[in-house]
Length: 339
Image (cartoon, rainbow, N blue to C red; front, side, top):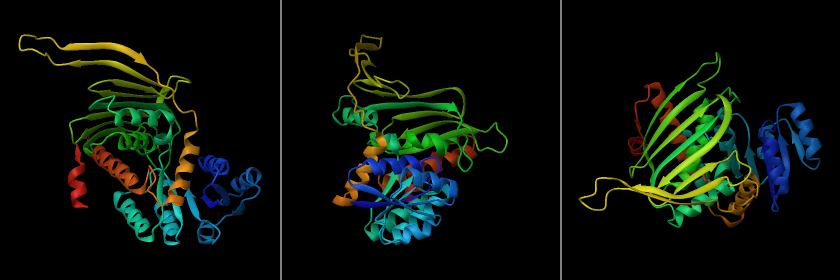
C-alpha cells in the first residue's frame, strides 16, 4: 500500500484525497494544511489520516511514501523540490511550476533521485481524451490539421494566475498528449476587465512543426459555460463537447480535398456518417491516482510525467511572453535550443 501525504485541503485537495481513498493501492496517510477549518473537514472525511499544519513536517515523515501537492501555484516548486529531495514520489497540481527553468529543475532532481514526478493534468485521463488519443494512434483521423477549443465560463477568478495559466493549461496538456508534432511558436493576446484581477480572457494560436495549428479561446467573463474542442484531420473530424451528459465525442466522416484532375476546379467534399463511440465512464481523477500508483510500483514514467509537464509550462511561458508583445509569435524551438 502506497502511503500518500496531501499538501493542501482547499479547493482541489478534497478531490485528490477522496480519489486516493477509493483507489486500490493507495491510502491517505497524512493531510497538511495551515487552516484549522480545512483540517477539521479533512478529519471528518478521513478519520484515519494524521493531520498537521506543517507541510514540511509531513514531507519529512518516514511513513509518507509519496506527496500530492494541491497548493497555490507559487508554492509548487518549493514544495515539490523539498519532497523530491526527501526521496518522495510527487504528484503536483497543474501547472507544475511558475517558469520553465524551475520546471526543468524539478525534472532533473526527480531523475537524479529516482522518484516519480507526475503532473495533475486530469483532463488527459478522461474517457473522452483517451478515446480520441486511441483514434489518432490507430490512424482513423489521419494527419492532424487543427485543434480548436472554446473553454469559457463566468469565473472562477484566480488570484495568482491569469486565465491562460488556469484554463489554456488544460488544452496545452491535451495537445501534448494527442499531437506527435511539437509546438513551434505561440501567439497570444489577453485582456483584463476586473480591477485587481489578472487577465481574464485570451485568444491563442499555436503553430506546430508539421504545419498544424491550434486556436484557443479562454474566458472567465462568458455568460455561459462552454467546453468544446474541434479536431480536424485528413480522414475524419472530431467534436468533443464536455458539457454533454452523453455522446461527448462525435466522429464525423467528413472533409474536403483538392481537385483530383487538372480539369477540375472545385474542391471535392466528403459527407459521410457520424458516430458517437462508447466512452469509459470511470472518473478521470481515479484513473490518474491509479496511474500514479502504477508508475511508483512499476518504476515507469506516468502518462503525464514531469517532462510533459515541463513542455506545458514552456507553452504557458511562451504565451505569456507573447501577450506582453501584443500577440507577436514567440518561437518555442529557439527557446528549447537556448535552454
